[in-house]
Length: 299
Image 1: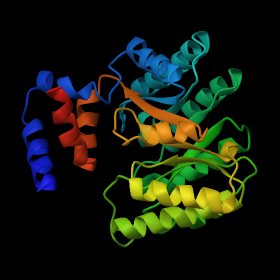
Image 2 (image 1 turned 45 degrees about the horizontal axis):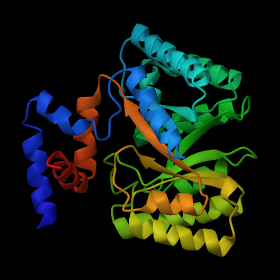
Image 3 (image 1 turned 90 degrees about the vertical axis):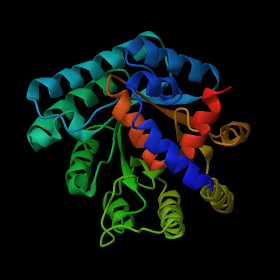
Image 4 (image 1 turned 180 degrees about the horizontal axis):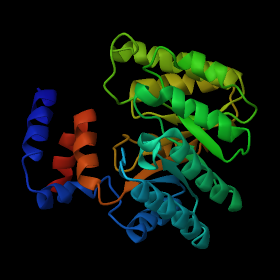
């Protein structure tokens, strides 16, 4: 019954004017400007939470725009350092020029990694759909040879992922492990939640035993319970992982639980003019958020 209600809410929200949608978007999008986003980061830091910041957008088709986005990220590194924030940056390859060609993407990526190195900060290369998995991994391994200030993302719902992690092995391998949100064919991806969770744990077990650093990115409470058991079983040092959550998504007390255990928690903070498309996408990916959002609107 709840899932049906959430589906109805989502369909209704997509028909509403943007001004109305903006009432709930602020719950999990940090505004449109650097100022509003960095204010959210400061607030999170004050609560003992780390952050990673992302300018919303993808699939840029204009070279000038790709360079502009890259420049904006460079400015963000300056502002993060100036304000002494515990915050790194995540980028989508297609947002900084991948759709314009691999060389354009690599040129912009290198600029960002050089800037991250300047401040002893870090850059996360997000993983998009399976169409660019090989290209993204190739770019990551290429940059990793030059700097430890770079990481990537692997998606547990893809059959290939455990092999990818093994193939990329490095003394400095640092990746975010998520389930995956893109619609992928059953030929290349696991469709069942239970089996995705099983693969997630299999990949995580390998990463822990290989001494990798992992950003454990999930809001699945059942999976989190199993992850805690795995950490205890393998006696994994807290300096080899962090838990990652999306800004504004309810965690039923698990953020506090992580902090009580002295585990690092990093909040993924998206912002920018593309907040509307992101907000609708988040709702469709996780219908349970819909009920949470409506409940908060009437508090």
